[in-house]
Amino acid sequence: MNRLRRWAWLPALVLVASAFGTTAPSRNESEPGPPKPGAGADFSTAPRVNVDKPVDLVPLYQRHKRIHGLKPFQALVDAAPAGSVLRVPAGHYAGPVHLKKPLTIVGQGEVIIDGGDKSTVFVIETNSATLRSVTITGSGDSHDSDDACLNVRGHGNTVQNVTIADCLFGIDLKQSDQNVLRGNRVRSKRVALGVRGDGIRLWYSNKNLIENNLVVDTRDMVAWYSHHNVYRGNEGRRSRYSIHFMFANHNIVEHNRFIDNAVGIYFMYMEGGGARHNLISHATGATGMALGFKESSDIFIEDNEIIYSAIGVGSDLSPFQPDTTIRFKRNRFAYNGIAVQLTSELGGNDLQDNVFEGNLTDVFQAGRGKGDKNTWVGNYFDTYQGFDRNGDGIGDTPHEHYAYADQIWMEVLEARFFKTSPVLELLDFLERLAPFSSPELQLRDPRPRQHKPALKTLGNPS
Image: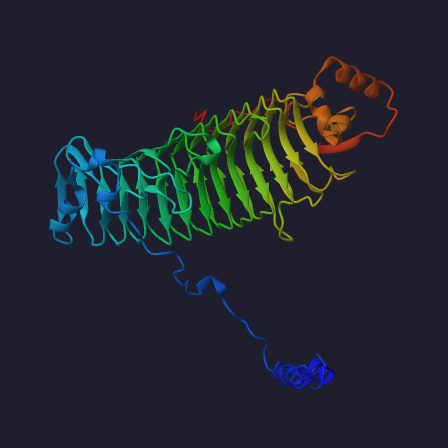
């Protein structure tokens, strides 16, 4: 009897298998048949279902008692008619605030909205609203609930000249398009770098303008799954990532200053867009990197000044898509540890008319014999050893960079500590004098510049 029970499920399994077509007769793949599921689908225009959790603001009475005696800012918002201008007298007000109608809010004098160190302080959940000239402070410190000073969930809104202070996340855009964030000042809570929140975060938010903001002492500025945004004229200091793109395509970063951050701009799984006329300086430390690429494609890097960083460009498997390039033009790489570090063998990097001066190492190309897969043309190298006999500004011989003793610190990470030390310099001299191993070609520029060109970067606009 037990033996029969053991096999009692077999008929049901046969029925399930037939339902999934496992018993259907096979056919020749070349024969015409019904189109496969998803064939011809255009995911770029597919509507996105709102999967974000609804706004859940902690009420005033559950927040810190220091704000219980303040006038609730929500009362002013509720009393103002939709579409009107609310001019707020100077004063200290209590949060939280939930704006659910189009309204223009303008602070008159010093207007402070305090969230009492609990939850999110201010939520804009409408379209075509404006928030200007106020200070928002005192969010909670929970990463689970994304506690922020300002949470934007709408389209066509403007946030201007707003001061964000003592908040976990600063300005958080969620599924919000065509907003303008201009002239704001953002600072996170005074905690360790890894547990701060993001200064400005975009999540599934497209075609926004982030302009002339000051973001200091936060964790990152990030854009996740957010396309066609413009970051212009911002300044970021003492954070981890100045801007971190992930699955975010066709974003433009221009005329910004990013100083004393661990990483300047990081392009991860990004296609299209690029960076121009930015100053990225002092990206130092163990992870210091001015520009980073991870499996990204079809990106331009033009007219930037990349100085005093551990690594100027760190590229991993980029460009990733076949038949695409990453184009570096008219950039200045100066006084970096490694100016350009290419840690894949795919090639596809095009470097033209750049300036390399004062770097400890101009290029580090991973792999063996792969220095010819990238294009180097018309660059200036202060290490070039050649002449210009006809005076056309182009060196008579190509500039070739080989790795001799450099291979030691390139291949043994622990040895990088001794880079430029006397012992490695001596080994490098002996290798060049009488090589006991075959040097590796790192780059070859057939038309190196003899004289340093004047570049129109943000640090040198003339």
